[in-house]
Length: 205
Image (cartoon, rainbow, N blue to C red):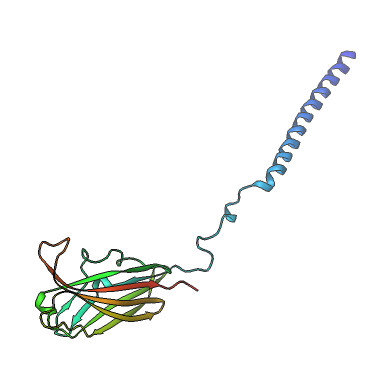
């Protein structure tokens, strides 16, 4: 009888130990979950956009690299020379971006000796979020470019022409006519009309 009681007591004790162990693990897991509950990483909360919400990326592309400079004698040049011109005019203009420099259109010598005016025309495209929005045509008519008889070398003409369309501003402050001028890129003398050009994409409001 005593052996049976001892056996029952032993079994009961084992059951209590197992129950306590199981219960302890449950409590520890609950506590761990409680501690980590406020620090869990939720990918759905990692949202946001660079540059602020609701802002669209606006930029301009001026095609002055293909700008045609037409002279009064009917001669034209289809774009500034890439080597002689100041670098940086072929670029994507985001708001605030600015270019200032001289662009050189090359001609034959005789084409520059008897002219009265020059007319520059080129396009500027506007984009928003990489989508084409509009195209504006810029035109600058420059008169009084006539050289005096026998006048050669480099001759300066002052201008103050500004044109602003749809948030893009272009100005021409000066024109130069060069006859038989030395070049860093050509073994032969060059003849040109160089324009001092400024281009600016206006800051977004």
